[in-house]
Amino acid sequence: MPELPEVETVRQTLKNLIIGEKITDILVRYDGIIKPLSIAQFKKRLIGQSFRDIRRKAKYLFFDFDSLTMVSHLRMEGKYYLRNSLKECTKHEHVIFELNHSQYLCYHDVRKFGTMELTDLHQELAIPSVSALGKEGNDPTWLAEDFFEKIKFTKRPMKSILLDQHIISGLGNIYVDETLFRSKINPNTLGNEINLYQAKRVIKSAKEVLNKATNLGGTTIRTYHSNIGVDGRFQNELMVHTFVGEPCRICGDTIQKTKVGGRGTYYCPTCQRDDHLLIVGLTGGIASGKSFVSNWFSKHKVPVLDADKIYKNLLKTNEIMYNEIVQNFGDIVQRNHEIDRQALGKIIFQDPKKRELLNQITHPFVLEEMKQEIAQYQKKRTKMIILDIPLLFEAKLEYMVDIIMLAYVDPNTQIHRLMDRDQISKSEAEKKIQSQMKLEEKIKKADIIIDNSFDPNHTKEQLLEIYRTLRRK
Ligand SMILES: [Zn+2]
Image 1 (tube, helix red, strand yellow):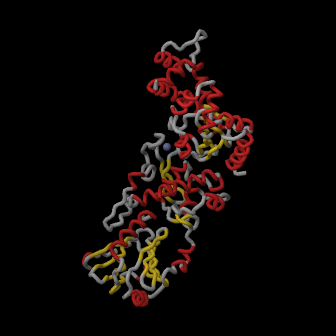
Image 2 (cartoon, rainbow, N blue to C red; image 1 turned 45 degrees about the horizontal axis):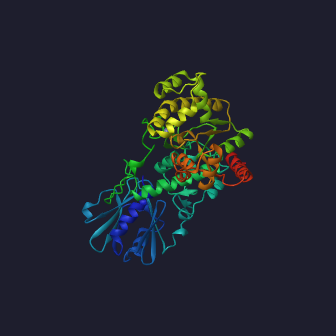
Image 3 (spheres, protein in one colour; image 1 turned 180 degrees about the horizontal axis):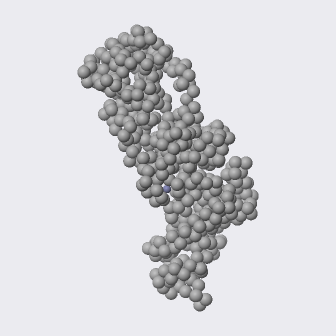
């Protein structure tokens, strides 16, 4: 089935082939495609007109002639071929436009659901089904706030909402699955369960998916080929659609297939959890005010799972992890048999390979512990938790959270706070900051930025607003 990127590819390709061509005759083999005119009227108005432009909205093509616009809706299977002789036409080509340079533009539609309608030039909005179309999924003026207003009380699944062409147009089955995967939203999640930040993610993902697919000429999978010499390449970018039973490329869990609103739907059960727990990831650069944020949420009775605390605790309680560290890092055990974290810290700070090794040893244990604690909150039907993970991006744990919150300070303030906090020189502070992923990189990946460059009250005001938005209150 063609979707926006495929129809756009057809538009661009056809435009290069037929602009300036005049229609000299029309053969209609199946009347049902022409609406609402009689075939005789349709032919009378179009013969003698030349193609001037081809425009598109969602899955509608608008062919502009000298004084008319023909609105062609491709529906399920519609496609166009350019033929050099009538003999090449197959039985599924129901409307054939003869052009002046002995070429034939043939409309092919196995299921005959497509339609063609004439309006005065550029008057396609006079057709109700066209004027009812929502903004296109990659329209830069499609705003999260408007989208959220439209859906925030809706008890329909997100999958059905995104397929609804009145809300947003041009997203079909493939691209809705891909958009929801990138948004970390389960296809069955209802409109009234998501918050504004998630709505923003949906819009960002839809635009990314549609723009990338359009640039790659659409997606060529079993149901649709544009058949005018262009095959799409977006199938190589698909993350879930068609991949049932295969491992998720982000988390390794198995991609599932289900039906939502009667439509085959692919999703990852881990990246797109279907429970009522909102997991907000909290991360940030060194000395960026992250602990101020996590303390604020704790005070507001939002449970905080702190990866650092879990790690420190495991150092004391997990014998397997303890032994592996001691075997690999040697003389770092104190008299009381506890691992000297400062000594360990010094080793890994100076040696990236050792840092990598320590991560390899400790991350699986920390991850397992976090997963177990999250499961407890799911059982208790907790509504929201904060997952405080300093290395959320570096450890590739974004899949564990629904929303990413980043504590930010401007670089100058960051250096001075770090110098004060750790009693170190400017160059030492710079070195520490440079050993982590750049804050600018992290900003691009975050959904929420908390600017801690100013006084605590300024931060608190932001946090209150963020908290309300997360809770939809
Ligand atoms: Zn996954």
